[in-house]
Length: 230
Image 1: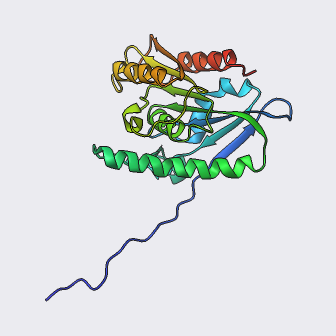
Image 2: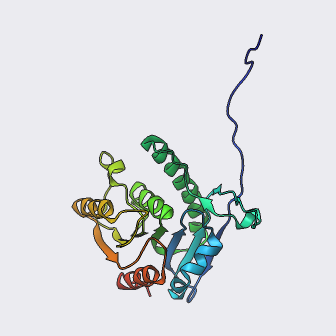
Image 3: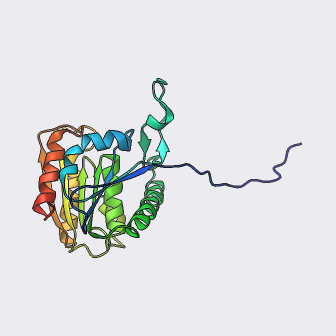
């Protein structure tokens, strides 16, 4: 005879690193939040977007919470890649997991904004981090001024019944014409929808693949400069 006496769920704590870098003179300035791609970490991502660090801004690099096991066992745990959310193909699970990740990012931001004065906030995400950047910006639209999504998609369909006010938001969506991981046409449709909702949107397809090359980095940096960053 077998019977279950008790079952339940218990939270498991995991420490997730983040890094805030200040460049330029000590004054009120923009804050740029960087969200890396799948199986990357903040150390790798900082190297990939290093040209952004000459902008006069606070640069916040946050590492995703879910570790990706290194099957080759060549890396220490701290060097493993990470994932931002858990996705099994079901939309409800996708949204639930992105909301949890967004709450995590918001908690970090709230703590930082208690200690530094910022004039505007930009969210820059690549691939998996791009999906999350879009969700974060649309769900917390009061706090985000600029959004850059590279090789991802801004899932506007999630917000069709709860959209906010986006007429203050500047959005850059960059996509590789040879991207075989994430197709560009769905992202273009999402950008068209965001324009209808009032956002200032630029969709740009580059001669590139899905990989985060210097072409994407330079394009996003130049766009931020055109938005008044220095």
